[in-house]
Image 1 (cartoon, rainbow, N blue to C red):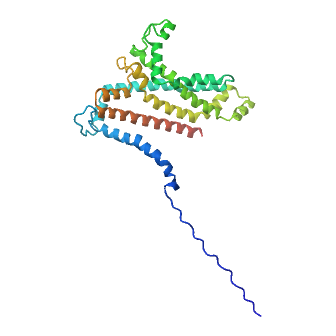
Image 2: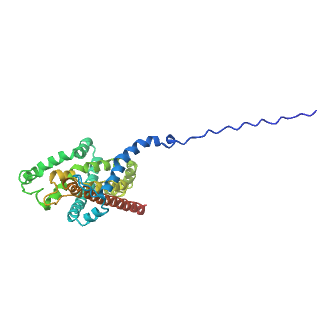
Image 3: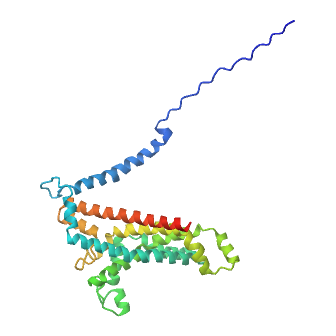
Length: 306
């Protein structure tokens, strides 16, 4: 008797559903609102401003025609533009160094305190929350007029803090350092609190002193934070305007006038909007160059250190 074995049934192939790669698949539906706002309020104004810098547009009316790079050529030959740019660079150098150094020192002091840390944090960071108008009025009362201000009255001096061309820039640096050092202090303090404590404990077991810990652990681990703070501070100092405009108006004798105030005066007092746009884009190019150079420098240092 012969037994016939039936062949196993073959399972029918399961159809693979087609995946539609739409906007939701790539997350574009979530990014789109930000992109629209970004383009409308940053990209489009930037392109429009560059177009204005290539024309003779005037907010008071008159002929508006294409001049190409004529505004830029005029700006490069304008001694007042170069003088205001020099003032901006001087302010940037004089303010960036103490703002970075004092921010680190204050953060180290507060981080190592064991009592009333909240009070010291508030004391160092509080001025940064004040509007520029409040800061300007406060410091005007402290350093002006000569012989009556708080500083002159306390020191018994008669210095023209805002009236002497050789002193006015230092007065603006002092005001700015007091006002904005709290931001750098906060960034450094957050970075210090993220350093693992066991590194200090291991160093203490090896007999490391406080200076050894600072030099071998703290400062190297704060390298990235320092690079970020330096770049942010350079950009902020190059864009200085508010406190100088409110306290000195660029005086005395244009000794404190930054390039942004010069562009403002040319555009809204001289009504030459196209030329003012060209001056602004020269500053924009300078900021981009300085930022990229600074980031490249810190990157090279990290590569050498590693």
